[in-house]
Image 1 (cartoon, one colour):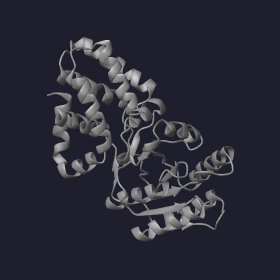
Image 2 (cartoon, rainbow, N blue to C red):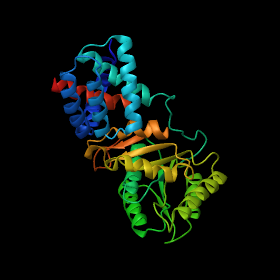
Image 3 (cartoon, helix red, strand yellow):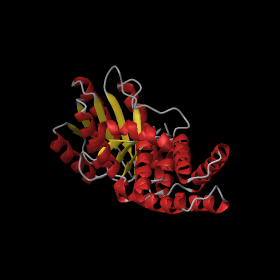
Image 4 (cartoon, rainbow, N blue to C red):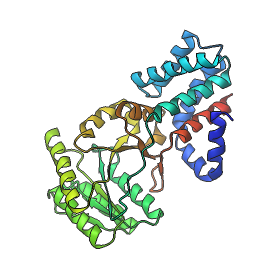
Amino acid sequence: MSFVNRLKEKFSRNESTTNRYLDGYRKTRKSLGETFGSIFRAFDGLSDDFLEQLMVTLLEADVGIETAEKIVDMVQKEGKNRFINNREDVIECLMEQMSALYNKNDPVEIQLNPTGPTVILVVGVNGVGKTTTIAKIAHYYLEQGKKVCVVAGDTFRAGAVNQLSEWANRLSIPCIKGKENADPSSVLVEGCQYALENDVDIVLADTAGRLQNKTNLMSELEKMHRVVGKFIPNAPHESWLVLDATTGQNGLAQADVFLDSAKVTGTILTKLDGTAKGGIVLAIKDKLNLPVVFVGVGETVKDLYLFDINEFLLSIAEELDDAS
């Protein structure tokens, strides 16, 4: 059975959820489907012209130059090994190579604390949808039967505290918050104490997206990491960076600011439904070696899904089928 057909069989088992999920990629899948479709329809071999067009298409999808070059090289090498000379086989080869690139290291599972509360720091610059994303993550875990609380650690921006508190009220979960301009680490400590005393499963902590300067921001994130581990062993168990998918490669530059100080373990892409440049998921994994944990594909609290690279690739393959 071919790679693409295996994907179709796998995801057809939960068709209603899969269809909603795939629909979130509609702009990316339509853009790539149309562009890939045009170059694949004229495919007559792995010529320099075809490989150049493939490179351009990947760049337009915001895969990034380094990652795009890797994919093209992989397709060229594998294609020659297989003596590929038709449209179906080259599509199959491309999907396989993109999956292989994303999965070049072992898949990373979300680290849940088996003996107490799981603490998850959520980091990112202001304006990427960080606070709303925390609410969506909370809803995700509530749906799994987990007991959740949120911590308003972005104490330097009153709007962020109020927004998170409002979301907590809507979700009927506790929001631990300090006074305006309070030490974020002290608020996080209060959140951890509350979680321990109330048998909370998941602690979601908002963090500042901007302080006076980069040095202050990084110092604060480092401090939060230090203090939380004193109250809950191995905490924070996850540190997720929220990126706006519509910013494309600029998001990678934002990531550099947080990687070390926040000890980022994964990324969450918001607004993926609003961009034709979903290839950023490949660039994030390839350049930063960070898995995309969740993707936001809509405005409601339910529009957050665990990311699966093969489901993403299937959405593109199905668009190619429709375009053929």
